[in-house]
Length: 138
Image (cartoon, rainbow, N blue to C red; front, side, top):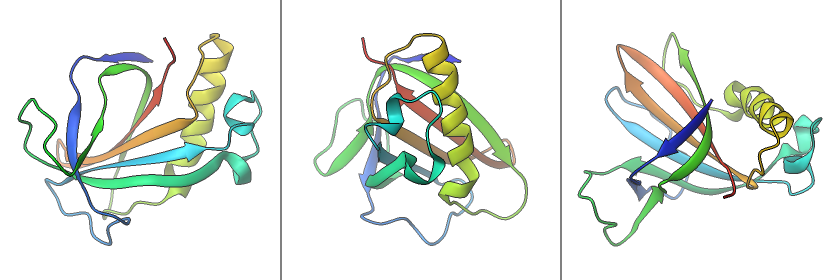
């Protein structure tokens, strides 16, 4: 689905992927995508991800970008979400197939997608949810 995020969400950089994901915590990860694979309707799964651009934990929303933070910028995105039952865990194997399907759908609908994906990992409604935000070029 398409989503317009009207205000940015701010996060404090953590440097690396965290080892634990406690309840009521929220994390944001941003991955660069291989430029050739990010434009392909049939991307190669093993080549899809390029590198982790940042890993961050939710900070208090203040409406401004505090020093030392990163953000999920306001803008237009392709959006996908799934919920996970069981203990918290995070790895690319869980969301990579969803990101590829999201790309296929977006390209099929003739969207111009940026070569990055934001993954928001949070605890809500009694379980863990993973949300994918793929920026759509204006």
